[in-house]
Image (tube, rainbow, N blue to C red; front, side, top):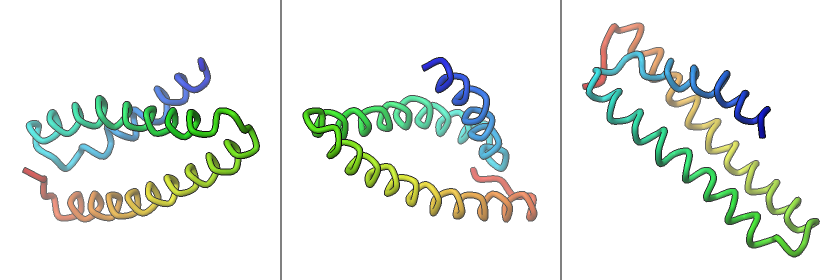
Length: 98
């Protein structure tokens, strides 16, 4: 748990902060609050639900938990590519999102 918290603090938080660069202070404030509060809790809820459904069978938990995780990784990869391209476009054009 200590390693997980350390990695989250060292990698995840600076990465989230970098993605707010081309926004106004109002948008940054509102989106950061939502991301920090609901995004983190929804992630924990999803993991807990998968674990709870398959708590009686470790092989099923490993198989379906891995499939669920790979699905999330796929969604995150698509979102990261889209957001990264949009971020680069906004920075190159010196625009901000209002």
